[in-house]
Image (cartoon, rainbow, N blue to C red; front, side):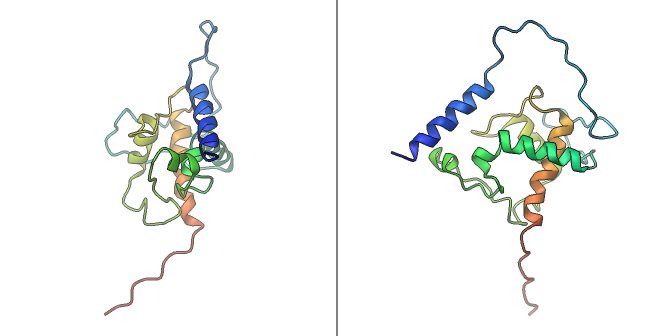
Length: 157
């Protein structure tokens, strides 16, 4: 019963965060500061595209903040996918601290999953994160396995 309380509150917070703003008139968006030298765009369900951003300390700090707000409640602070919310929703999430987990996934594939959602994972709308920020988020997610020790190579026969 006590495990359901954090799941309930996390679900409420997620629902509030995803609600459209009420009572606002049309607004003109001010341009976001550039985090990359060129626009980083990938259309919905993009074909293979190389990640167009070069990470900076500033862009990775923004990606970390975005991850903490939108991703960590399910995927965990360190990306291991072991959270009460994930288990409460009966989700088995990949462990991004394991270097093998994302080894066969291309950046554009991760971008598409983040931008468009998958299964129970909601999409990261362009109103919450620009394409450049999502590309930086992909780089940030890949960094979780870099701090983990690599498994020793299999002995040669």
